[in-house]
Amino acid sequence: MSKYGVIAIAGRPNVGKSTLMNHLIGFKVSATANKPQTTRHNIRGILSEDDCQVVFLDTPGIHRSSKSLLNKTINLQAVAALEDVDAVIMIVEAERWEDEDSLVLERLQHLTCPVFLVANKVDRVRQKSDLLAWLQKVAAKREFKAIFPLSATKAINTDELKRELLAIIPEGDWAYAEDDVTDQSTRFLCAEMIREQLMTYLHQEVPYSTAVEIEKFEVRAAITEIHATIWVSRENQKGIIIGHKGEALKRIGSSARIALEAFLEQKVLLRLWVRVEENWENSPRHLQALGISSTNTQ
Image (cartoon, rainbow, N blue to C red; front, side):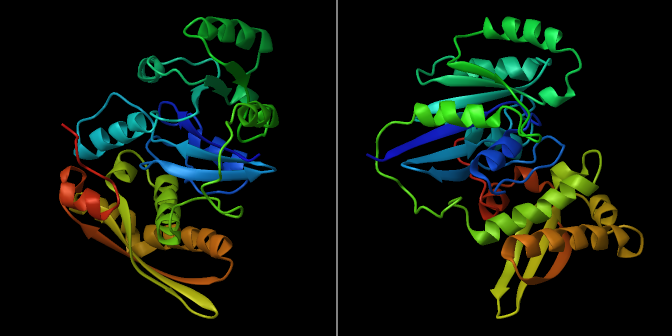
C-alpha cells in the first residue's frame, strides 16, 4: 500500500528551513542564503522513496515585523501552510531561543498533528553538555513528537529525522509522479536562483526591497535565453545593484548564470535589467504579478 503525506517546515527567518528541505529531498528547489526573508513563497519539495511520497512545504520565516503588504502576505502564507498537514517540523537554532521562536510556537499551539522540533546548526555548538541542558528547557515548552539536534548543512542526524518522518506518513495515493521534485515551474525556480544571488551579494536592506520577474524564457537546442527584471523600490537601490561601471550587476549575473546552467544542464544566455517601481512591496498588483498573493491581508 502506498503512503502519501504533507509536512510543513516552520520557523523564524534564517534558521535553515530551505536548506533542510533541499537536503531531505536531495535536490535544490528552494533558495538559500544566510539572510532572513530568502523564502517568500510556500515552496513544495517532493520526496518519493520506496512506497512513500512526502510533500515538504518550505514556508517563509514567521516574524513580527509586518509593516509592508509584502511582509504581511509572507506571514499569512506561512501560517496558512500549517493547516491540514500531516506533521510540522519546527526549526530553531541550537542554543538560541528568540522572541520570534515563541511567536512560531504560538502559531502551532492549536495543531493536533505531530510537531517535530529540530535544533539546527549543532555543528556550531562547542559544549555538548550545554546543548543537552538547553534542549531540556525547550522540550518543556510543548509536547513534541520528537526532538532532533542536527545540522542541515553537515548532514548530521538528518537521516534519523527522515526515518521518523516517513514512519508517520499515512496511507494514500501519490499526488505527483515519482521523478517530480517540486510543483513550481522552471521559470519560478530560475527567478529564485537569480534572487538568491542578490541576497548573497547585496548588503543591509537592499536585498529585501528587490524582486525578480522573468520576462523571457526561451529554450533552444544548445542554449536557454533568459531575460529577467530586477525590481527595486528606490532609485538609489538601482545604483547599488548596478554598481560602479556595472560591476556589481555583472558579478550577480555571472554567479546566477553559473547556477542556472547547473540547474538547466545547458548553456544560458542571461540578460538582467534593473527597474524602479516605488514602494512595490505595498502594491497588490505587483505582488500578484510576482506570484505572491496579497488577498486577505487586513
